[in-house]
Length: 115
Image (cartoon, rainbow, N blue to C red):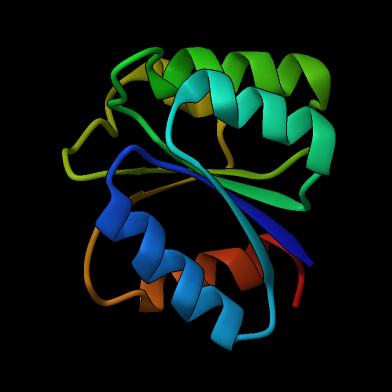
């Protein structure tokens, strides 16, 4: 299973990549929204974790573009802030608040991939 991580925080990228690869996933990363869309089209991941706040394009716009390309792709919105009341997030399958404890992220990935 291939996971695309789109996040401008290099520490989050590294943490998610190392932890998820240890669990047997193939992980690709992007540091910007535009790069995330390009990699999404090229790599065709099975699931995406997507940061909301990025410098070039916010995660909501990236989410919309990814859903235009593949409406069935499961997307987990990941942020350090609580955006749960933002209706634009309803297009995603899940929402998590970033944490050093990846139990919630890993559990959500397994649930969405039916593992």
